[in-house]
Length: 138
Ligand SMILES: *[C@@H]1O[C@H](CO)[C@@H](O)[C@H](O)[C@H]1NC(C)=O
Ligand SMILES: [Ca+2]
Ligand SMILES: [Ca+2]
Image (cartoon, rainbow, N blue to C red; front, side, top):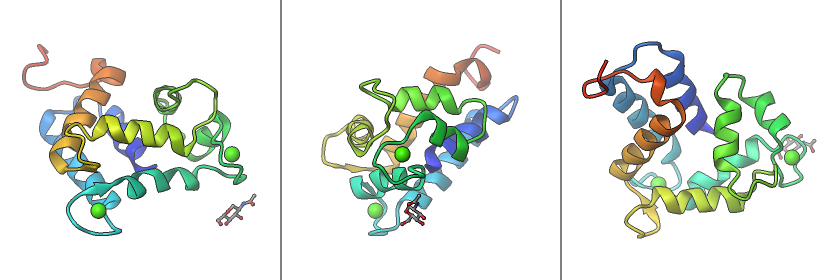
């Protein structure tokens, strides 16, 4: 999924600042928003990204499949974050659960603002030690 490209890009840069993070997030949002292209990310746009990682088409994305698609060192941490019920299968249900976390306002669509908040929290949670910026105390 493109979300991991975002996270990998962020983690790959040593001294990233909050301005870079925002630019990466805006680009990734635009990639997700395509059907329909309406300035919002709908759940179908979010959930569909999992099919590309399901290499054997059995509706379960294993860690092995995930790491075959995403080779950055942070991929395993992100996989475990998304695997909500820890059954070692990323499924549409996991993606759906995550979507509703991103949709903070609960209106079943994700705005750019919700997207930015979510990825700020996610990157802080998983890779906070890598992110430098105003207010980070470094
Ligand atoms: C899985 O589905 C994709 C897209 O429909 C197809 O390109 C691919 O060959 C399929 N892979 C297997 C192992 O069936
Ligand atoms: Ca859309
Ligand atoms: Ca699979």
